[in-house]
Image (tube, rainbow, N blue to C red; front, side):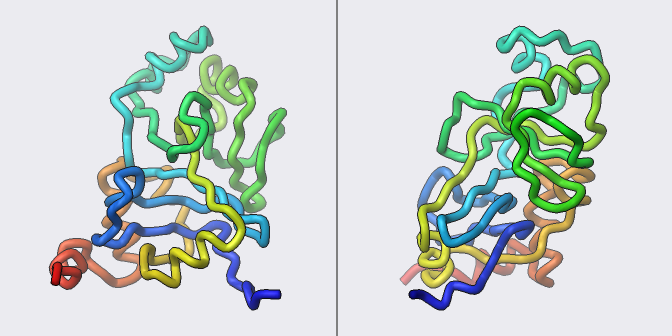
Length: 188
């Protein structure tokens, strides 16, 4: 029985500069679920070379809300990269939603994309392809190896800032500047 009392649901994981895994170098990951079975999250600051209009065309859903056409689709993580996940607020009622908090959820069913395409709802959302997953104890191990910094998440960073501003904003929550952190890491 381990003393795993830490629950990082609704926290950001900030990749440390020494992170060598190319999937996570310089990433900001939002943790949607963390329990004794493991953890699940989505990277929120790595846009793919794809916009919503391209994605909607591929999955054959009309995108009538044209103001959303140019929004980037994010690389959510290395697991199920052919599958879309929508991080959104408010929670709403969709076919397959993992509630993260009262007002925030991660939905993987097609109905939310149909709603986004037809009415632009929910108003605040982020679309990713793939997600990040950790087996039981794996995230705790990586934290012990100083692979990540953690900080309580702020929904404004997810939904109110462009992708390139999200990591520096999360660092600010900790009182760090990413450039200074990089200088400290160095190599032996």
